[in-house]
Image 1: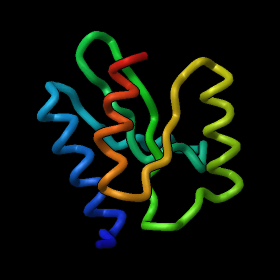
Image 2 (image 1 turned 90 degrees about the vertical axis):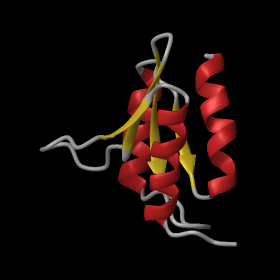
Image 3 (image 1 turned 90 degrees about the horizontal axis):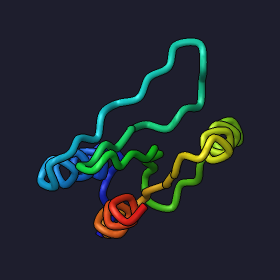
Amino acid sequence: MNFSESEIERRLRAEAKRMGGMAVKFVSPGLDGVPDRIVLLPGRKIAFVELKAPRKKPRPLQIKRMRQLECLGFPVFVIDGIEQIGGVLDEICAT
């Protein structure tokens, strides 16, 4: 079953909250292409998440911003399906 990007985003927020964390909206005026959410989990775990509709891919500018964040040492994930949320959050916890 395919879910909309907004439903995937809602589920990510809910699952992060269930784990005692937050998935906050990331908006950076003057810096386009940043990931949609910053995920903050207990134990000082942080990652950036770009959310996409099923089978959609990040735009070139989004890929550039994700690479910049990765070069700074931050984990960055792309989620385009509800079934990916648990694995991504587990990976964030493991870092």
